[in-house]
Amino acid sequence: MEQLFTTIQYRLPDKKVATFLNYLDQRCITQYDNFFIFTQEQINHSFQTAIEGLVSEITISKDYLQLHHLTLVSMTIDGDFILGNDSETYVIESTLIEADIEKHPVTVIDFFVSYENQTLQSQLIPTSNQTPVHELWEKTEESKEDTQTENSLTEAKSTSEDNRKKSWWKKWLS
Image 1 (cartoon, rainbow, N blue to C red):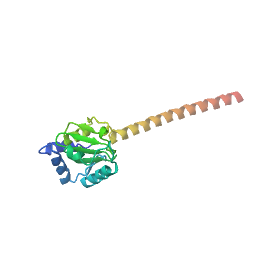
Image 2 (cartoon, one colour):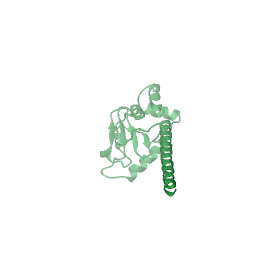
Image 3 (tube, rainbow, N blue to C red):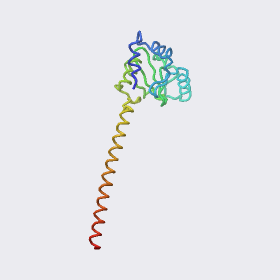
Image 4 (tube, rainbow, N blue to C red):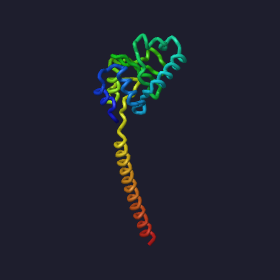
């Protein structure tokens, strides 16, 4: 996996949310790992639609962002939202249930670096523990070789057994 955020953290002059979002916007980084979406217009629209459609006593209100000084940062392909201020990062499920919000005491850039380094402790965001594609390919090839070897042994055993049976029948019939 590409180490995008690890690189970005050293290029940012500070760890503010606005600086992070400006950096992504200037470089047209709209998604990462086929999981995080950074297109602000899309994220804002989805968030506002969810806020309006899921109004209840247990969900966050329209004022939640202002009360906690949060900025929408990203949305996952699952519809969960990543928000942050200059010292914390929040993960809010697509259901917007306030009791289910994860608060991480790290800046947004540190949150994404943790995700990238597979050290993020989250119940909502899966840590990418995927085996690199080249390793999967090697395992597939090894598996094919093992299967071919097994098949060859089975065929040889079967052929040997057939020959023995034929030989037995020839002896018995003679």
